[in-house]
Image (cartoon, rainbow, N blue to C red; front, side, top):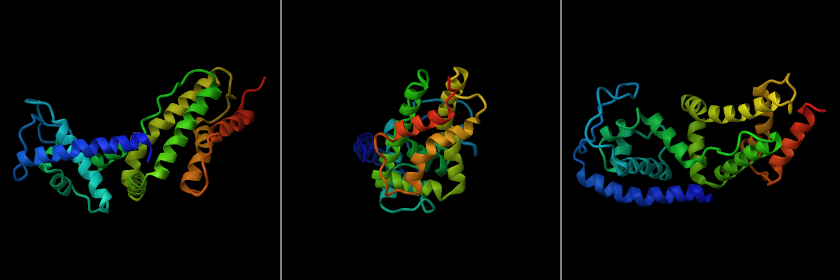
Amino acid sequence: MRPAVKRRRQEWGRSGESAVKRAGDRATAGELPDTGDSPPLPSGKPVGKTRGRPRSEAVERAILDAVIRLLEEGVSYDTLSVERIARTAGVGKAAVYRRWSGKDELFLHVVREMEEPAYEGPVDGPLREVLIGALNWLRQMSLAKRRSTLLRVLAAHVHSHPELWKRYHETVISARRERLAFVLRRGIERGELRGDLDIDVLVDMLTAPILVRILLRDWEELPEEMPRQIVDTFLDGLGAGE
């Protein structure tokens, strides 16, 4: 497990245990002290004006940690329910619905929290260096998923539920692809790439080699030099030339 993932898991464990105890002591049958949040609409948006005290971070961490613990115990996504999560966290269901519209949104929040942080490297500068940096981040994130049993479990649940996968793609993957697409468009504008190229195809060409090894050939290594090799091959074939 990569240090960043392990650290977040440890932090959740420490804060979650104390939060569960505090929330459990204060919870009654499905009730928590009023946080000032209104009941959610089906869309997940609150009704009316927010009032009272801000939401408790300790309760939120207890809920997130409860999802992780249930998954680690072998609970499947299909049998994971808001009621069960709330009971494990020692809070009422209302505490969950104040923060997330339902199980799908809560689960995707957990997935995003447990994954590596979003790529924050440069998007401007020499095209070769920027692309190598982006692919190196993808390689590191892929290695983290390969090494972490928990991340593999999370990914398996997402991929096995079409609607969940669609929402994950819309909220997570699309943003990553657009960041890379922006870099490529800048490269075309500066004359570093040919101008007759389809951006979506270019994104696929850059990311596919790493994704193929992760998804289809997971026994193969992801060497450190792989991002550089991919980018150099890509630019040799598709660069604007002299």
